[in-house]
Image 1 (cartoon, rainbow, N blue to C red):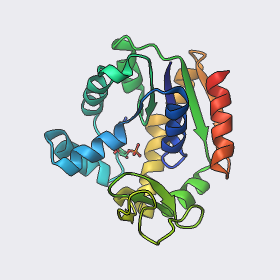
Image 2 (cartoon, protein in one colour):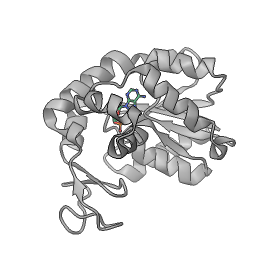
Image 3 (cartoon, rainbow, N blue to C red):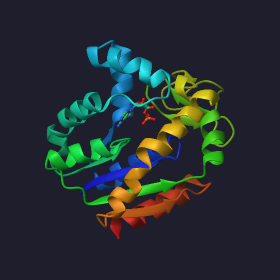
Image 4 (cartoon, helix red, strand yellow):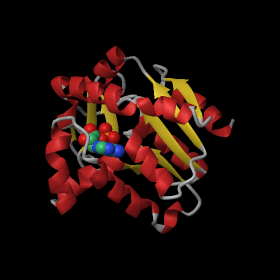
Length: 210
Ligand code: AMP
C-alpha cells in the first residue's frame, strides 16, 4: 500500500508514520529526515538545502523530487511505503504522478495552528537517533537526554518560535492546497489530531484500514 500523510509541521506526521510503518511493515519515508542527514553529512544536496531549512522555507521542488525518486526506487519500497513530509507542493504531487506512482490513500492530520505552536515550541529531538519528546507532554526521563540511546535531546533550529510562524505560513500557502488536490481524487481522509497520541494513532489506523 502506498500512503501519504499530510499535515502542518508538528501535527504528528512523523509519529503516526512510524506507527503505520510498524503496523503494515512498510518503510516510512521522511524527506525532512533524509535532508537533515544530508546536511549533517555535508553532501552537495545538504549544502543546497540547509539555508532553506534553517529559515523554515521549503527546499526547491527539483531537489526534493530527486531525493524522493531515488528513495522509492530502493528495494524495500517494493511492497509499498508511507510518505511523511512529501509531497509539500502541488508540483511535487504532480511529479509523483509523472513517476507513475499510484497512491492508495492520503491521510490528513488536522491540528489547529495554536496547538501546533505549543507543540513545536516544546519539542525536543534526539540528535543521534531522532526520537522525539516534548518538555511538557512527553519529557525524557533525564532532562536533555534521550531515553532510547542517551544522545542529546535538543530543540531543532527550525522549531524556534519565529521560524514556526514562517513554517505555518508556508504550510497554508504551499501545502494545504494538496488537501483539495487529493480530495478531488477521492483519496483523502481527514483525522483530527487528539491530545493523546495513541488516540490519534487509533483514528489513523482506522483510516488506513477503511
Ligand atoms: P520536516 O522534518 O518534515 O518538518 O522537514 C524539515 C524541513 O525540510 C522543512 O521545513 C523543509 O525545509 C524541508 N523539507 C522536507 N520535506 C520537504 C518537501 N517535500 N519539500 C520541500 N522541503 C522539504
